[in-house]
Image (cartoon, rainbow, N blue to C red; front, side, top):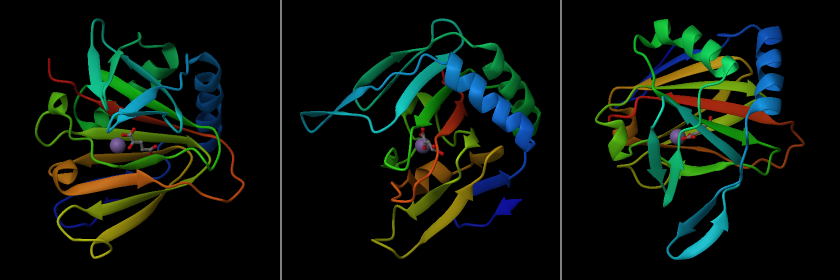
Length: 194
Ligand SMILES: O=C(O)CCC(=O)C(=O)O
Ligand SMILES: [Mn+2]
């Protein structure tokens, strides 16, 4: 399903994985990914990233964001299975994936765009969600405060494709929630230009 927003290209496949497969993948990733809680430096102040992360990709890849230099860990069987299932839909092959583990409603990702230099202009980003459903908020960069925004739910087993000028014009976040919710894993497959 196309999500119509100005200056964006968004496609949602809300049941890319059937629930049983999504659940199985969630548990395999939870158990097998070497999760770490990174530290970031922001205006000279160090703090813990409010979620666990892992970065995987083709041999020798590295990636830097918010002052963290991450060296890609190798692909695992479950990552390759997911990658294989989304590439025909995205129409490209990805060389890396950033994985986030949100332990509960307190874990989150702050407003940002995936507009790092290494991703090039108009990157295609394939975002797979497993586990607890979370809100995903969009805010247009040009319009102050609350003028142009949008909210979608990222369901268990869903695939969201973000492409075209989306990252150039829009910020996104996974806000913290006070609701008692379970853990969630998100995988954003990316192409890093080398
Ligand atoms: O967890 C999500 O759905 C989004 C994660 C994200 O935006 C990112 O890792 O860049
Ligand atoms: Mn992002």
